Image (cartoon, one colour):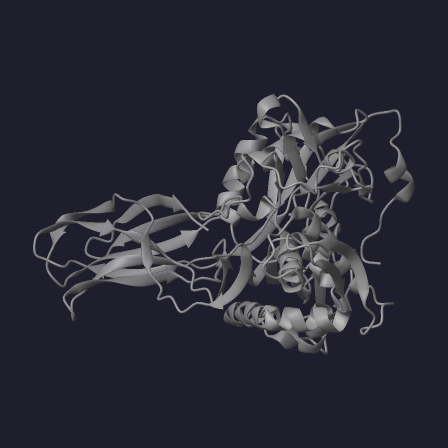
Length: 538
């Protein structure tokens, strides 16, 4: 076992209050909640009655009657009230995938995805046992919408009475809990209810370097040296890629395959999820048919939700899922290679998320990483438990999802061009600055303008919705540059510059908080300029 749980303490808490860290992994179908006390080396999965289904797991469901907005049902309460099989705008589910997304697919709920997620997180907080005191909250975020998701989470948690709030992307959280030795590199595949994420993560240390073990000495002026038993680990994300498709989409594929031309119902999707899970059990023969539902259609024709593993695998292949996984893996490996890491350099492969239990997917990943040890942590709670290993303090070197470019005048073509400063997949904080020399483009030039742009993601695969059914399509969009700020930053030239004269050497860096900074040196006078903070990126 990779993760170790204190089963005794998970059942009940002592009468004295425990102070520690709470981890919430908000999922599309299941949200996982775990707690770790400061003096305890083992995490505890929390049973939050009445919203928990089982210990640590809360169904990601919200029922809010629009006419009676004071009554909110969350998690298992919705299931117990038998409200999950209703196509009703009062029911919110599968909302995580659309949080932070610029294009939101309608889920027929009058609640926005952001509001539904906020209600669930606040209900979790209000359901915590009185015997625990939270001084640190760590949450997880998907790779694809990390930046917008982080902004949303920050707003949601602003009113929570907690000293520190930390955020980590889901693949990194899963990797950090794998307990590999310092310096190890591993591949993480995370298939949740709505997203697929691949990442290659390097744990710091090793190769003669001291293992990064430390304690959080002070926090908000309070001495924690004697209280904190956490280990400080450092990780670096070498490459990652993600796509908005996941386990719930597979459920929709199953229903649309077995009940074509029928209006999709929530009860059918729930039955498809159960059937998918049963077919993923290793003890089931591939040719054995399993049935989960029998219905009478609108035309009075009787149809059955019945499938075997062979047919399920054919469906997933025909829908392009394996090609999608292949594309994501290749993109992740390509990003890692830019950071000096090849597939052969990995010490482990970790598969997490409910979708990772599907034999076709698991066997495909094993085949693509034959010589690398395949690690099997608990697929549902792995991310939340891994997130706890990041606390109370972790330095994470992440990679840029998009690059950063500077608009420059190209004398040869008499036109402006976008010159890359930092490329997508490049780690931050930067270890060395990017240097560029800028010349004046005209006589008596008084200043140099700094106009920054962010390239749009060049996605090899995208998900579009046809009649409500997710479909994977190839994309051949040309990359465009979007300006980060409307107004340009200006660096004054004194004396003024002459056309073609090298005037300024600039050094661009990204700090620990992902702020882009620039230092300047006037090549004519030798005068250094004060550091300018340009913007916050990712």
